Each structure stands twice: as structure tokens, then as C-alpha cells.
Length: 412
Ligand SMILES: [Zn+2]
Image 1 (spheres, rainbow, N blue to C red):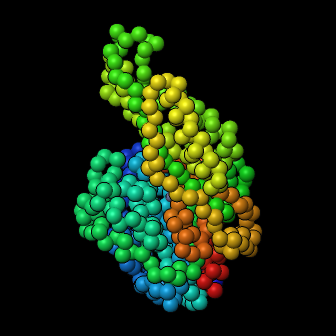
Image 2: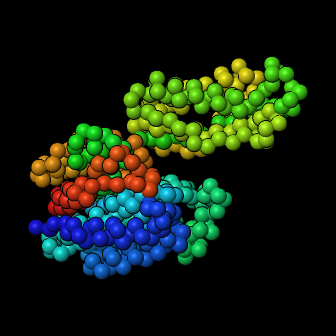
């Protein structure tokens, strides 16, 4: 019977965390950066050392296959994995857990000579965190990458994707070739930390993800009138910043009131022009993000927020411009994957609970081409996307063991 080797699992997690490690803890390892490329080389060595086939596709996705080194419609595979890139000042488990545990499971099955009916592959998807474009590698693999946009894709600091990939030895123009043939994936299951506190607070060790939130981002710009901040009477001012400020506060209340318990909203970017204290702001720009696991609710909130921007603009004598930046639809996980995870947990005597994912994941792309699902383990204090992200060693081992059983069931 194949089983997870805890020392090897924790040893590899610690080894991967050294690439891009920060002095005070945590990791900064954006895709295509030197530490990420060093981590990629290390991972390829680990895959090969585990006796698996190692390869990289044109989108930079890393694969480790048991007895297989390509995707084809003739031999549908059972796929697991996650990502090895991180957000700036991120933690050592977001993404890394799913890749390292996936490798551990496939290696354990290989060593046990378990000979499952379907081939098994572990994947590390490139740029999940979206420095240049969110879920880039899995989007390319699933045929969702718009090739015409690649030349314009750039990081927030202006660095272009084509340059970053070239530096890492990749041709960005070839990334769409990573698309897998139809029917190549029979099933996908991804192990991830919850990144929230629901499992920990409920004392439940295993989360069975039933859906993944959709995310909408819009640039909301208020155009007012720049004026002398001393001589212009208050009643005559058309202050773009005050319109933006009112929008940020009221959009938050609107989403809380109408979105039920499962919608969240954030204004994480705000710019005021010309941005000096002695000029009334002539223009204010926000990037407004909303997330919800229900498509209808998300659509309704989106429309309501656009109406809110226009209402505030009319009241304050400014003009509102709302431009959609991105939109991903909420995705449902496959029932048969959820049942397989629940059955694996039950066989191990571990309580599980179904829950939705409040964060985006590569699994949402895989769900468009295959039966896909996710397993969550508790995050200490719900902390994630920060340097002190952590899960108990035992929680990590339980998650990996449930993944192993799930993969064996799906591949049988
Ligand atoms: Zn992640």
C-alpha cells in the first residue's frame, strides 16, 4: 500500500521555501524571477530523482509523470498539482503544498508499484499569482489564453511578460502551444491550504471544495475639475477624490447588504491626480474587486456598483467611467471528485466538510476541461498571503494522505 513519507514531504517543503526566502521569514518568488527559475530547476531535479518523467511546456508549466511524458487524448491522465510562484512577501505553503504533496503522492505510488489504471501526473502551473496575468499557466494548458494579449501583458511595475519569459529562456509567443489535447485529463485534484479560518474554527481537518469564487475587477475613474485649493469656494468644487471616497465606502456597504454572506469586495488601488495638496483633485482612479461563488449575485452586484458610481457622479457634478479589467466566472467542482475526497477522508477516519473557495485557483481553469476538485487543510489563524502563513505538520500530512487516497481512487 502506497503511503506518504512525512520526512520527505516536510523536507521538500522546507527546501522549496529557501528559494526567494526573506530574512524575517516568508518568501518572495514571483514567476519568471531568478529565485523562481532556480526553484523550477530544483523541482525538475526532484521529479527526476523520484523516478518520474520531468518536462516543461511552452507556458512554463512543470510536469512530473508516472510512466508518461506527454498529454494525449488517447491516455487520459489523473492530474494533481498547484503552483510554486508566490505573492510578494508571501508564505511557504500557498501553492507549494499542492506541488510538493502531489509529487510525494505520485512518487509513493511509483515506489509501491501500485500500477494504477490511469497515468498520474503532478503539475506546477506558472504564474498562478498573476504577476503578469492570473492563472497564466493553467489558462494556457486549458486553451483559455488569448494570444493577441500576450505582447501587452505586463506586471504592475511595467515589466513586460515577453521580457520576463525571455530572461527565463522562454518564448511568450509560444505559450498558447501548451494547450492540452481534448480529453487529455480525466480528473484533476489540487491540495491547498484554505487561506481562511473556517476549517480551523470548526475543528474540521479536511475541506472538500464545492465551488470557487468568480472575481470581477473594474477600474472606476471619477473625472472632476482641478482647481486652486485655496481660492475655489467649497460649493463650487468638483472634487474627484471625494466622489471616489464615497464610492469606496458605499460599494462596500452595498456588497455586504446585497451579497449575502458569500460576497466580498476590496478597493486595493487608489490614485489621485494631480496628487498635490494645493490642487482640488481633478481625477481619481480606483481598482474595485468583487468576489462571490454565485454567478447571478456577482452579476447583480456588478451592475449595482456601476449604477452607484453614476449616481454619486451625478450628485457631485463629476463624471464616472467604469471599465471592466477582468472577470472570471464562479466554477463548480465535479461531484465525483468531491465524493472521492470525502470517501478518502472517511476511510482515514477524518471528518470533512464541503465549502467554497474564496480565492481563485488553477483548479477553476481545469474545471473547464475536466472533472476537477480541491482539498483544503486548515490554515493557522486563517493567515495567508503573508510571511507567517502556516499549517500544522500533522494537518499537512493528513492532507497529503487524503490526496494520495483520492488519486488512487480516481486512477483505479
Ligand atoms: Zn495558491
